[in-house]
Image (cartoon, rainbow, N blue to C red; front, side, top):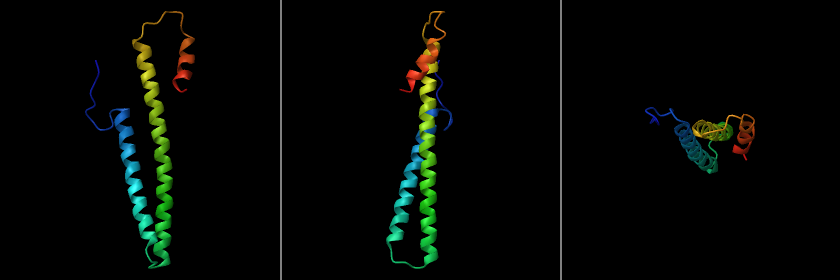
Length: 106
């Protein structure tokens, strides 16, 4: 019997969606920073702070992209494991699981 998630991060899919929303927010913030950097210079300190914020946003985006890939891998593994449990297997197929796991990532 399938359980429906009652909380936001109860499923891998909801965590994946949330990370996607964070990436969208980073894109918007980066556009704002780039717009401010294009304005006439008010002070060099202000421009340095904008550059640092831009760098930190890029760093955060890279971490979130890695997180999305990890969530994709976990989702693939979960699907593989759940299908493996529900499928009727002959008793002599113990070595086939390693091959099937490798094929899941191709």
